Amino acid sequence: MIAPDELPRFFRVRQSFPRPRVEDIAASVHDELRKCCGQELGGKSVAISVGSRGVAGIAQVTRSCVDFLKQRGALPFIVPAMGSHGGATAAGQLDVLRGLGVTEPSMDCPIRSSMEVEKLCTAAEGFPVYFDRHALEADHVLVVNRIKPHTRFAGEIESGLMKMMLIGLGKQKGAEVYHRAIVNYSFDQIVRSVAQVVIQRCNILGGLAILENAYEETAQIVGVLPDEIEQREPDLLRKVKSWMPQLPFDRSELLIVDQIGKNISGTGMDTNVVGRKRNDHAAIAGEKPDIHHIYVRSLTAQTHGNASGIGLAELCHRRVIETADRQVTRMNCITASHVTGAMLPIDFDTDREALRVACQLAGYIPPHQVPAMWIRDTLSLEEVECSEFFYSQARQDSALEVLSQPSQLQFDSAGDLTDRFGD
Image (cartoon, rainbow, N blue to C red; front, side, top):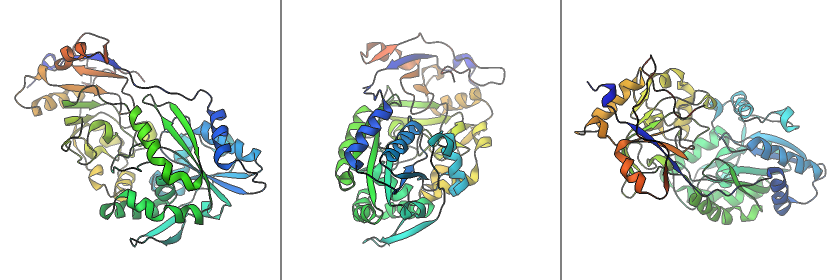
């Protein structure tokens, strides 16, 4: 049995990432919307898509869209565009929006939530194309979403405006169809096969792309004309990738993650950060970082029990199992054709017990020398706790600022780690 004082000692490092920022969200939204939908819209209804992700300032961005459209004489309303999230129910998706600060009083416009969809057409590949009924009945649709790398598939187009139109606004039925089709075709092929049909048949007014930096701040807002969405998304995605945060070291036996959740990533923790985009439990050739075992300590409150992605972890705290909503998690993972994302890791009653086992699983290495990193979540990587194994390397790395000396982990009376990252 490994004693607590034999566990690795940890020190903290600070990383610096590119930090472009939008200072005035409302002004930027208005400026960009003038470029892509500045015409008068007297009496026209406009559906605004709002997803479920934890997009920085999404309530302010959405309210700014509402205000702009009203200034153009339009009658805007909001449509939840989140595929099967919120338990694949209209009420559940309203709850998700409420958690993001998007409500009818705060937005000063109606929210029309429904899981009903209409079939637009059948793609050349043979799958049906669905679209939210309320959005389809509107005179126009304004597609609003964040551009970022997807956690499961790679290509020139990943998560962004195109995905919002096809999967988000396709609701549960559309999300299920596309995630099944991705097994047989690349997302890039699927998008290019049906994008123009959706843009024309659904009267897409324009797109508002939100780009974020590594600090979860709005880095840029870009208005895109409907016919240019498919062309411009690859360049916007490349820009976002150049700003992405990353772990300070490329290989580690253990990664401790304080929290995962749908507000953090579609897979609970971003596979682009933990190195498991193509394989749930190992990095493939050429993929970084290479993490042997992942230990998850909790779910975020904002994920509402959706533990999608917990299957990427080998170890977890018992509280993760106890707070997970099995039905919601399974629905999300089945719809996404990622059933392994709902599989449960070995759980432990205490952090101390989990870390002892993790050190044992690291192989024939003295416990205090086990390479390990500890993060709050995959969005919060400015400061990372690292085991003493990395100390010399960190001190020689000009990109890292060492903030503390290695020290013993501290546990409370229940055997759980005392929080080093704060609330």
